[in-house]
Each structure stands twice: as C-alpha cells, then as structure tokens.
Length: 126
Image 1 (cartoon, rainbow, N blue to C red):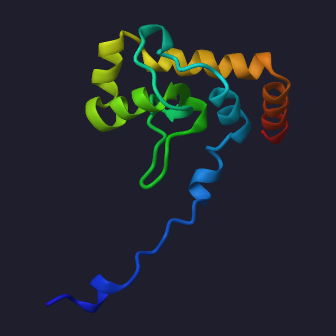
Image 2: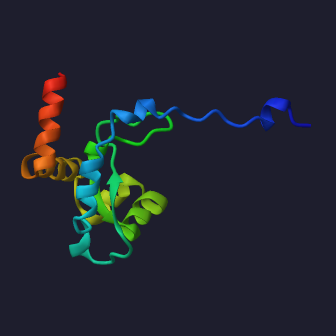
C-alpha cells in the first residue's frame, strides 16, 4: 500500500538559484548562429543554445550557466544528450567544449552591443 506522502505533488524548484545563470540575450544570439558542427554534416532541426558544464556550476535540478552554451542543431543536441554524453561526443567530433564555449562567449561580449552592455552592468554590480 502507498503512503499518503507518495501521492502528494512534488514541491517545485523556486528557480531562484538558476536566475543568476541566465543570459537571455546571449542565448538568443547563439540561436542565430549556425550549428557548431555544421561543417561535419548531419545537421537537422532548429539551432538552439546547448548547455555544457565545463566548470561544474550545474546544481541539483538546474541547468549549467548560459555562459557555457554553444549553438547546436536538434540532431546533434539529441545525439549528445540522449546517446553519447559530453565526453564521447567531444571525442567523436574532436573538439574541446571548454574552448568552444569560451570562444562564443567572448565573441558575444566583445562583438555585440548587447554583450558589451551586459559586461558593463556586471562590472558595475561588482
């Protein structure tokens, strides 16, 4: 027989821990880039910001920081998330995710008005 506690709805995460990790402007900019693996072929679906966790800032029930995203099509995103996992995926396509996410982040910060404004806002808050 089930206990009463098994039937109660699960308490939802407040998402407050996640708020500091979100940079919507950056994710939107990434969604406008081609899939990082487009030159390797096999792309299918929409390009989305794919979260990578190179620095271990992912918490329980939260995503990794938006700072650590790269643009990937739905096909490559599914291959990474559902079949291979990050280590095998990086090995298959011969890249280091830390270098890739850092390059995209710096390109956004230095190359866009929105990125420069975001960086200034962070400096002022510190």
